[in-house]
Image 1 (cartoon, rainbow, N blue to C red):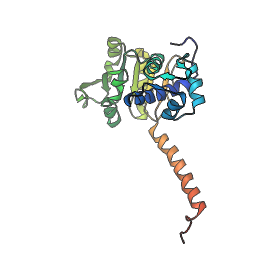
Image 2: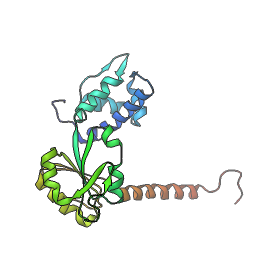
Image 3: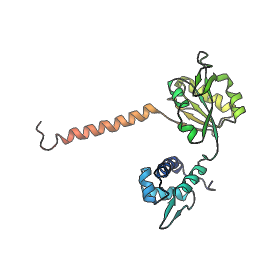
Image 4: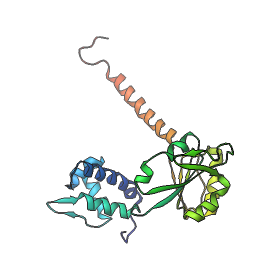
Length: 223
C-alpha cells in the first residue's frame, strides 16, 4: 500500500480502473497506454495519470503500463489481495440476489453467513448457505473475523441492524436500505440507493425529451 492517504475521489475510481484492466487482460492485451486505459475506463487520460500517481510510478515512458502488474498493484492498494469475510443481513428479494451474485467471490469477498430475523426463513438454503437467525450475528462475526456487513433489510430495520453490526465489531457497512445510517466515526458506510439512481436517470431523460421537443421535428418531416 502507498504510504500517503489517497483522495476519496481517486479511491472511488480505482475499482473502475481495475475492471478496465480485467477487460484488457481478457482481450489478451498485455501493455496499454494511459490513453487506452482511460478510454476503457471512461475517464480522461490526465485524470487517470493523476489518480495512478497516488499509487506510485508504474508506467514506462514510450511503453505504457504492464496491464497485469498494474492490476495487481491496484488490487493490493484497495485490499483485494486478501480474503474479506462478509455477512448479509436481510434475505428478501434483494438479499437473495446478493447472496447469489458470483461477482463477490471472484473479487475477494467471501459470504460466510446469511441472516434474517424472520423465523420462517431460517434454515432455508440460499447460494449454498443456510439462512441463520439474526441473533447469531455476534457469534458469526467472532468466528469468521467478519470485516464487512451488508444490510439488505427494509429501511425501518436498517439502523437497528447497523447498531448490532457495530456492537459485534464490524467496521465497514454496505447499506442497500433507503435510509441514512448513524454510525461512530471509526465506522465506514457506503450506501447503494437504487431508487435514487433511477430518479437521476429519469431527470436526465426528462431533460433530453424536453430538448428534443424544443428542437422540433427533424428536417424534412412535416408536422
